Length: 607
View 1 (tube, rainbow, N blue to C red):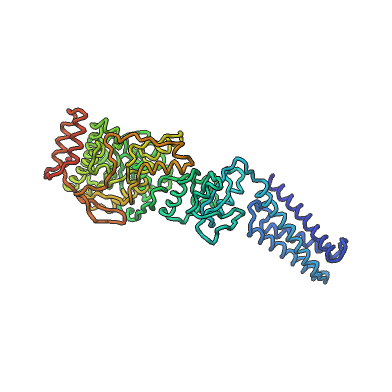
View 2 (cartoon, rainbow, N blue to C red):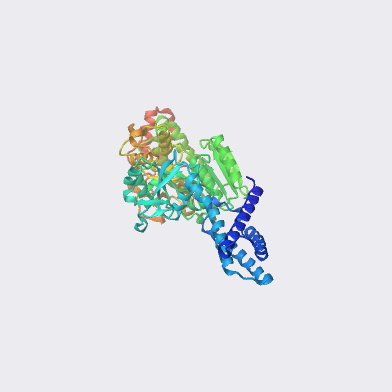
């Protein structure tokens, strides 16, 4: 129906209503339906006034299927003012004042106009909703957000959800009906309510809860077989950016049971804005997010350095589009950090103020099979990058390491530990501030276990877990990148920065919760234990015993003190590894990374 046709039908409809109400009122007051000349004039003024006020109030533009108290008040004002104006005209020009007639007419108009408008909403909500093939849904939270969710679900006939009950811990709401939907219990008996009411879907609609409180609800939901979803941002729902079709599935961040660490990224602006910044590994999951975060502070130039042309092309195009209204100059550079000459040339050409070194081989099993490649990239590549930065006067150099570098049992972890030693030694002999940042497992990064689990669930299982006792620290990609940027701002030189990530998470519990919250059962998907892979540990530490310190340089950021650096031994290993077989290389790397003792030798500064 076109807008003009809609307006025409409304005018015709209101004309019929007004004439009917006047005739009925005249009959009720006077006892007949014959309208006198003054009454006819009253009717004409009432019609014209009603149309004018309705147009001014935009009542003909209202979507009456969403009518509420606001629309009812608008109708009340239009009907009341139009009656008053018509009555005043009759009093002034005809000196007639039949207050009983005016009052009854006002009441009839209010009932007929308001009733017909709101009847469409009632009809739609009670008769047009198709309950067949809809998933019975329980809404956790009977507050304003929960009511908004319930209202949207019921109005959206295309949604495959049917709200059958609320769960709320407020005892005052217990056993009440909200929008015709009962509040059937609290979170403590959620499992029982799901079973009793044959619930297939749970929507959590309490945006004000902390992560810890939300995690408790997730754990209760995980005891059921219902699929659990979370309300989008409330403001997005209110302004229409998202709808009931955009309830998001539970993400692994929700299962960590802690708030994401928010760092003071404003303090970073001073050493990034209008500066030249270089990021190695800029096409990777961490490197690309670092580039996005850096761009918020508007550096003069951002050099995107990486070995993979497709990933560098992708992040370059993304940043140019996202920050096209800034003066940032993005410079993509295809380079291999193993090429020392190329790294010298890049540093000399662009003279960066800050370098973030995110390029590395990170996959533990693959590095066990290719230890020589781990040495080339993680050790030699780091040395090349660090020496080129030092020679060209870079002010701050931040290297990204891993918790696997602590008491390493894997080639990957051992090479990252040797890279840390190189960075700490470089800081002692260079004017550049060299620092290291250690991560736990980064959610959503390439090689992370979470995308693997989700993909396995999508395929119907089973989920593969290496060991039932395997535990890991987890952080999100935004947390990881903020830590990197904050470390650069706090760097004095030589530090190892570690983020307080709360308690470690048991991998098998993470897998079980993801299965349950996806609406499946553990029996349907299944969990298989594949055994610990080469180089893996049951538990990852964040600091070695000789690195432990109580120093907290910033909320949630700790510093590990420097431990022994084996510069001479690293140089010796780099000179002979190419002549060793893989087993010998693997053993030499891990032994050296775990060696205890002292040494005073230094790395040569590149000149």
